[in-house]
Image 1: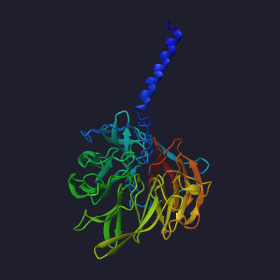
Image 2 (image 1 turned 30 degrees about the vertical axis):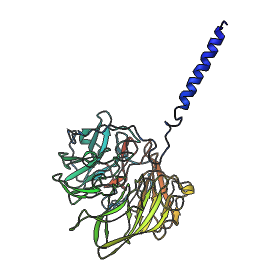
Image 3 (image 1 turned 180 degrees about the vertical axis):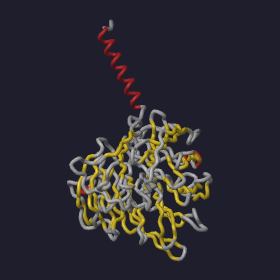
Image 4 (image 1 turned 180 degrees about the horizontal axis):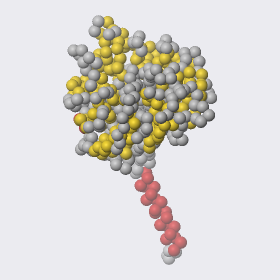
Length: 478
């Protein structure tokens, strides 16, 4: 029988279909599908770890400028770790018809790292994408001139930005920690390199989802850092780079985006840290310095950005994003024994919670911005009495919603930065929310980096620009 061309084509199609079906049946059709897990979405492509990083290798002097300014905002959340300025400088209440008084701007690598201020100098850890480098940049607070920069090469891929941390600065030292947990210590005055520490390499640390968000803590010329990996927490001599003590980590808790908070309770100073795995209090001084005083794995979230908020009566407020909500622990002490009790635990629709920023304490009340998954209160600023974190004293209302941006108190004014770069001035209160004024300062996005203020100069940023505003009332420019 003669087979026509039509039949040949038809048989070929059928054979091809049968082979494809057989291949498909022998293969798991969903094996390449991946579920979306909280904290893992939008994560950047993996970066091959390079342990041969020459920290502090490069330096450039750019300008010289003298200053007689003396005020400081020396670290994350300011001098007293509470995001409240004690400066006597009077600040404006309204921007006026000409709008905010912008002193200067500086272009940055994409990120959310906040600045520190020390006696007329601004210090900021940036990431330079052209040089592929973590870069500590020093600016004049008044003129915005870049005075010097110190950097080192390290591969970092963009992942909702790169740099996220605030330097710790005192009279002698500046300490930074980069996206991949490289620590650098330099002389404050001239940027001279002193020492570096590769935390990822030396402590087998797993860098958090969106790179390092923990800001370094320097007290008494000692760097206190939560490493995770081989040690839970360490102390390093800022002068020599020598590790002074290491806190064991038998449970394998990891580094979170949260920062260590000093806390004094019943006459005992400690460092409180909300880690991946639990929350811990480590002795800050005395014969047991560096030892665990208490810990609990009851608070165990995969993505933790806000720091622990420790109250004088022993209450510890813990919160995180991605639907985690919050937990309030009560710390008590009998002789040398500590006890932790859970007072409240709830989802963000039921009480005060935060995704990124740490709430602040004002007149024994707690003020914060609700996360996007807080139902009707999403992105509103709220105030609670710590006797019950689920009861709102006031809210900013549906017309005053914010985002992941920072907020602080200075000169009895509440400054709130929205995601789009709008700065709001409100009146801090324990009875109601009162907005005074607001203005769009930056035409950018993701204005999440922490605020800093000194001598009436307010520093804020979006993902790519640092801005300095003169907020002093009646100041005449020279």
